[in-house]
Image (tube, rainbow, N blue to C red; front, side, top):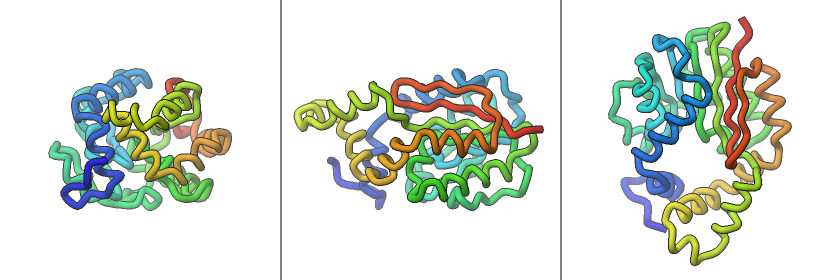
Length: 220
């Protein structure tokens, strides 16, 4: 593993080398389009939580959204974002927004970092519900235990494979450093789905290639 730079943690260093910004941007655009973003109002007030270095915000801007905000707990990752969205350092269990003030909240790979399930998940989902207007949408993309994901981690258990492919090594490094929360998340899919669906009406749900891609809507 490369040593951390610019005072970022070991996990953040692995995240920054897992994908280039261009690769991540293409990935986020595919996800947004698959979940119907091309049909969402472009003047929607959008918040991405656990936004990291802000590539998801760039993807939203590419699709024509302009009222964008990002929230992350890491100042080091947010420092990598240079776009026009307003970004704030905050805990997503206590979002810094008024009630019923936003139209869309997005999370791509952040909920599985929560230290305590179900408590922390309930708190984040409750906060999302609080800040969304009636009819607002919540988009969730998170790791999910599928045969593909199990195969990837099996390959990653071989040192030679990690030495040959830096992307795989970065993924396995992140997994090792977040193992407790990652495994806690993967082994409780029913709990996760119940929490989401208790608050939101499901519009779309895709499971495959090691991901849950889920879109819910707050009742009118």
